[in-house]
Image (cartoon, rainbow, N blue to C red; front, side, top):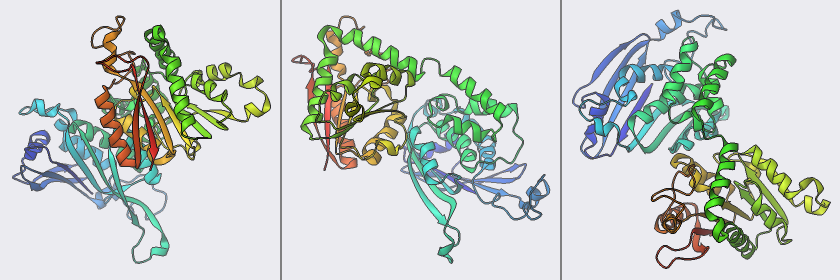
Length: 465
């Protein structure tokens, strides 16, 4: 069972300070189920790699097995060889200080995001590569997975559930270790020890600052707690309480109220909807999906234009969809109009086949509500998987905020915004996304333009090459 962690932070050997393990010597540690060894296969100023090797004692493991189903099950299994809850225990015991984010000699380094790559030699994934990506990509990781055959000598036997996995991200080492600690047993969907109330505390402690916002938090809690319903309910209830202020329904209502108040004086919302509809019309799109449709304001504009033959609205807020249904009067629409439009509940964070295959997608004032890991996941959901021919996207121009007296200096237009980009920042992000996924992009101002600060809304129109 092998885990390696590499960095190109300079000097890369600082990794030894973070892990409390000297790159110049090998170390071994006794564990209840065997021994752990820490070595550094490479340790230069340019690149450093720490390897955690677990040597699980299969005899002791078999003798301690209780309630096994088949007579040979304690003796013939994959437990000594694959990443599992044994790895989580080893991380906690061998890299405990790093896991907690402490570093006596480099406290500022422990709080600094650095480029990291974790590689797990054999990781069992009950749910396959799709689940692997659903768990790690919303956290901002670049995932590379190589699936192993059951037996290379007998390809007709098919593929196994085992992968060699590399996870890359610029982050704090403590965050990487916490993600591995929780998600490796979740992918394995098993634990080698009894799960009780204390496991809820472990989950909440190691999931602090990320699990409450993870789109798969229910699956994570259920599997981590070995499908014990009462423990899962307790964990989810506490996660929900910790996530106060991020309820999608409440956030949607607050967002609409606050942003409308700031923009009402110049009628920006109407100008923005008109600009988006015009861009969609100019693209020649017949089938359009509005991602993050909210209360249906753009949908109503599109429905009035017969050029759009099929319209789909998707939002994570059930309450917003109900308001949109009333705004559009779906129940009383004439049959032909009703056939043109549909509303669905869904998240923008993971692949959804229902939004694939459309001519165009609208993303109106949505991306600024996504934190960095979710934004990276959304990029793939939209541009790689849904892959419409045209994407029309709007976001606030931070430079223009200075012209609004109602906004304090440096404040965002809405408290739920994770960022607001300048024109240069939006252009840099959009051009990088376009290049990565095979699109071109052009930029248009929306609203009254200030000679120095530009327009209040910036719009990018992406076209698939």
